[in-house]
Amino acid sequence: MNTQNYRTHLLKNGQMAVVRQATPDDAAELTAFFSHIAKNSPHFASLDEPIEQWLSLDSVCRKILACQSNNGVIYLAFVEERLAGAARVFRYEESEMGDMGRITAGVLTSHRGLGIGTALLYSVIGWARSNPSLDLLTLNVNSSDLAARMLYEKMGFLEEGLFIQPGASSGQQYAHGIEMYKFVK
Image 1 (cartoon, rainbow, N blue to C red):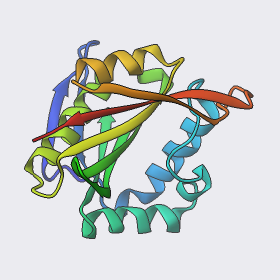
Image 2 (cartoon, helix red, strand yellow):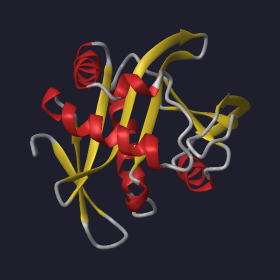
Image 3 (cartoon, rainbow, N blue to C red):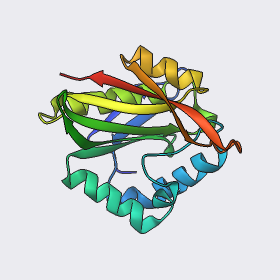
Image 4 (tube, helix red, strand yellow):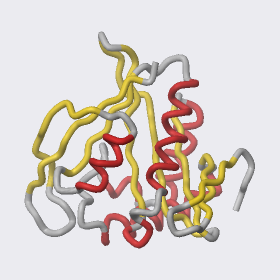
């Protein structure tokens, strides 16, 4: 595991998480991670693009490179050298409120509730605050994912609205999503 420019976080179970930016060398592990998330998360609904774009090694490698060159970042969280969580932010829109970054994130079901999501969000928010072109971060969360909603609220995100999104992996045809935002400047 490449540990250049990393941060460690003490988790609630006493283990250490290592959080660092993704590189193209991480594409295979990130592809397997998203495959696992898509199949096993009871709250997984959708990313801002089809999940299939995260299940191809070539596509994931291109996304990592695109983040590096187009004002975005992907952070990875490792526990005992195993990828346990990932968060991406990319600049996606200019508006009257400023330039916005969109967050997508996930943590393995087996590692939820330990503080990995918090560690990833601290990294993403810190990166956004140091990025002169971003003023606002946005994300959406499945309305039934109470733990994620509480995490985002704890990190200062506010609810903007409710919307209907394609169904969760649990077989639902539709799920309710909540759009959330946080000013970083």
